[in-house]
Amino acid sequence: MKFGPVPIAEAEGAIAAHSLRHASGIIKKGTILSAELIETLRAAGIDEIVAARLEPGDVHEDEAARRVAEVLTGTHIRLDEAGTGRCNLYAEEAGLFVVDRSAIDALNRLDPGITIATLEEFRPVETGRMVGTVKIIPFAVPSAAVDAAVALANAPILSIAPWRPLKVGLAATTLPGLKPKIMDKTRRILEERLQPTRASLLDEVRVPHETASLADALGNLREQGADVLVAFGASAITDPADVIPAAIEAAGGHVRHVGMPVDPGNLLLIGELDGRPVLGAPGCARSPVENGFDWVLNRLLAGLDVTPDDVTGMGVGGLLMEIVSRPQPREPAAPRQDNVAAIILAAGQSRRMGGPNKLLARFDGKPLIRRVASRALASKVERVIVVTGHREGDVAAALDGLNVEIVHNADYADGLAMSLKVGLSAVPQDAGGALVLLADMPEITTEMIDRLIDAYNAQPEPAIVLPTIDGKRGNPVLWSRAFFPELMMVTGDTGARHILAQHEESVERVEIGAAAGVDVDTREALAEAGGLLSEEA
Image (tube, rainbow, N blue to C red; front, side, top):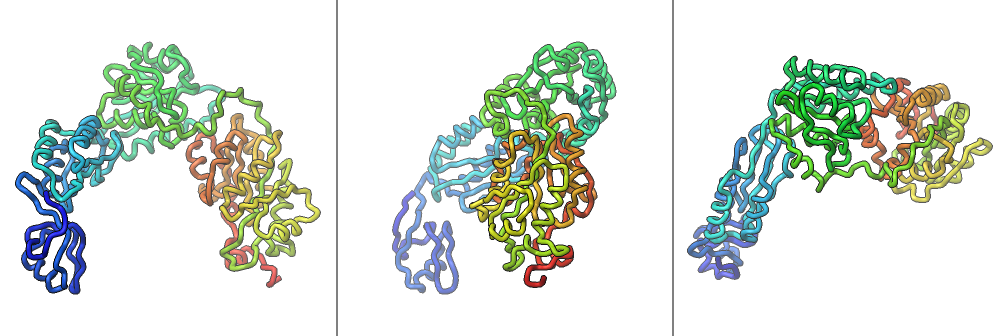
């Protein structure tokens, strides 16, 4: 292929290397220049262009992209029409995307002009999702390079393993410390995992955390017709002779592998019973957040075998999503402390108010910040910490005489997360948790705060107490100290919704009604809640 400046008189049949604007429109890059287009350019006063001219043995970019894409295509993959040197590939069925990575690497190393990009292997995809693309970089490549690619890809490289209508049996063990609602959540989250696939939950059986009981449960589920068996232990698998692996053996099955190099997900087990796969679920699978359990379960639901080599090959890219909350070396869990501190976030700039600081608005004659702080002080919290920022002097003056600790966030303009970090840093070491209270919630009462604290104290394990309005999340949220390291990693104004999702099993919900959702971001909301801005007061 020849590339460079070409006189207009010699450009017919050449490929425009750049877009060319003229009085009546534009000739796009990659256009093959016809005699008519040449006349248009000549009329526009253009006498030379940069163009590519194919030589014998060259393959045009579109044809090259199509030919390479055709040899990539396996089952349930379709090609789009090639254009501008690109040919996209799409899933024709929902399922798992399967790709021969070594073949893609080899193809990408054949010639710098031929490039192939795909989704990561074993990504769940829906029908119509683009899974790969072939892009030819120059306007043409040598036919020898295309021929080499076709010869190298002598078998389909991309395919979809469709979801299969499998029945999943769930065997869950119980111990005195495991609350039924946690087990209910576990079942619901498993059903949510199955929902995008064609699989369904056949049945759930709950038995004591004993080898014989679990072995019977697995056998009964298998007799009911379960295609895949999932065992959730009340206690994590810590040894190949633990309850779940022992139960699989006792039921007549065998254990194929214990453990996986994916975190979260380390404590996973794969086994087999009567030719059906058995998954011993790690504790993190009680959460809807992606973990190693998803990686294995999805393959099984697409009808793919999962071998010990498959599992041990998952280490590179093995998630590492929760390490921040687990300092090393591991420290023994400290006895839970029931006393709670309140953090009132009062650093915001009240931008939506158009000028006035909403925290100084009057409710029943008192500034809003004083109303909120007074109600917290009257509750069961041990200490009240107020984080100031915007107009800190005015906010502090409104709190004059109250027994609160004021800490200033100099970076309040960076968002709520900075105020949260400042407040958490001020929580005394003897406090077991922190109630994070937004300062612009005038309807939160002392009684409501006490209900949240009572619910927190009733939990035997570290908990997150979440107030709700007709089942929907609200504020304030009470966090056990165990979650402080993750809260300290929050950024911007996004809040901590993702942490709630990661620790669904630790969330205790308390219905407190509409007050949990009332804030006063605007003048209209403030007036509706009964407040008066300072100039109105």
